[in-house]
Length: 194
Image (cartoon, rainbow, N blue to C red; front, side):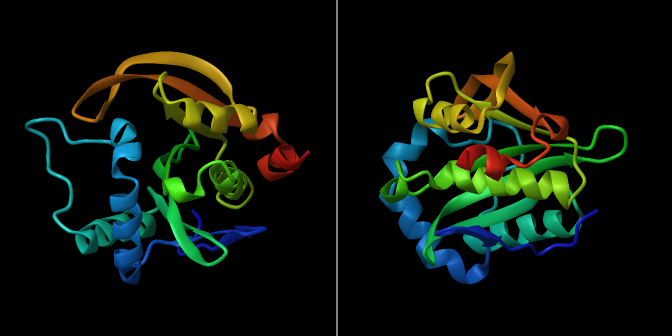
């Protein structure tokens, strides 16, 4: 298991632990990009445990999960400014050595290659430091921006999951992409930059 916290960087992109003091920048980014993010945002289905009531409780919960080794919640910075979030979720150890990655980006930073670089950094960390074997990314079929991310990274599509995640108020289908450490022995960042 890898110690938390973790800092990663490449070029103008830095990944670091999500902090309480990110609250103002996090809220501003979410507010500024709300209509752009809404179709892709996870929601809580009726009858399930509710989301954290505040930003502070969200960060507390994510930090507890990170210390327990089941999640890695990264803030994304571009040239020192808060730009979004990449989270390694559902880390499974034992014989699986698997995790999934999710992300969101302030629309002001879209089209600059920020999320492909951030996800490449995270995958390399997961493979070469955290010792994971496989990473998956689930993408709604209509999400052309996220489809471009997995395409740029060269992740292969491994399946289709009907009604996979509760997104924007309903159970939504997802395309599933994956990569194993054997598929990018020189690292995802090197693959992205070549």
